[in-house]
Image 1 (tube, helix red, strand yellow):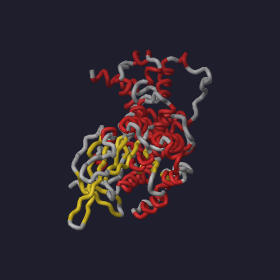
Image 2 (cartoon, one colour):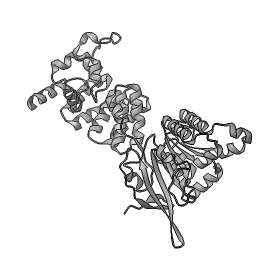
Image 3 (cartoon, helix red, strand yellow):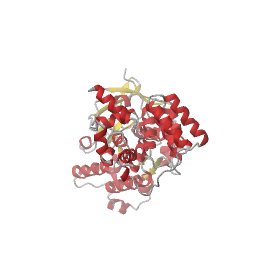
Image 4 (spheres, one colour):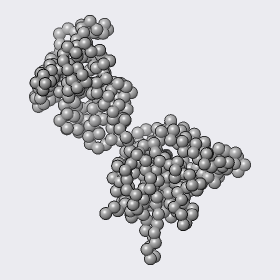
Length: 431
């Protein structure tokens, strides 16, 4: 059986654009002979994981000459570059990487933007785990806005291997837009994405970060640095990953908030250096000012819960934001007259989830003797996660502690750990 498979794989390697990894994928998908493969339709081949739609069509055409697109005229004499690339591809299939790359480099010296040569070069370096070199080849095609989904997937795979998953997703999304049948792109996009918090020790405890689309309570009593903690997460996601983030402050003024965060080393300029457009990656909306400038009679008539949801939805559609912090629930409650808090808050949380963003809700714990994480006692059941910040007095000092009391889809510790805050950032001490 093993000899038969090896023989079939060698035959597959003679097909256009098929290397060993793609040959194995085709074989394991049930096309375990050239006869079966020759009878396959392009749509069937495109469903094979790792086989892009254009390659599936190329293989199909290889077996059925009558199905070649009429708009493509018969090729005349092959160019020298085509002949060299076919020779290089044949060497690549035989495992002779160095010789194949030398031929590809010779082609690129004459034509630095030769699409086939750059794609082969990127694929070879990617398979050899030379990720930076693979990205250099793909980047030339990406800068030309190529419609070849394999290029975008290749670049995404290189980023993924370098542990830069958040960046890689953008390239997988582009590949998926170009070819919804691209199995690699679909598979990567289906991976359980988590947003890192950049709180030292916390991401490790949360299996990589906060699950995307979770609604998480950041709870604590006055002075527990809830706002700073939430702002820090958004700032670092913007600064390090270029993530679009929105911080909604309903009580502290925008200028006051930014001055305070700057003292913590969170200068807004450092977040905006990751801009991908003329708009800031870090958007701060001053709802407190809006509240002050709104007629007092009008305030009582506004459905603030739905207004907040609508505003976040508008910003998401405009900026593509991925994470939002609302500071705070108690301020939002002060604007709202509830008739049935349990029911109204249930629908509020559900609407936040429907926005397809991660939401941090800062919740003030008002009762000094109870660990009640929300004013109405239902927030902790409606939320997907709860991060609790608390202070404990030791003599004349008050030390901060952090505990994750709830985080759905995550196996995490429930102990409380010292939370250190200094110029280098936030960090929990787990040892």
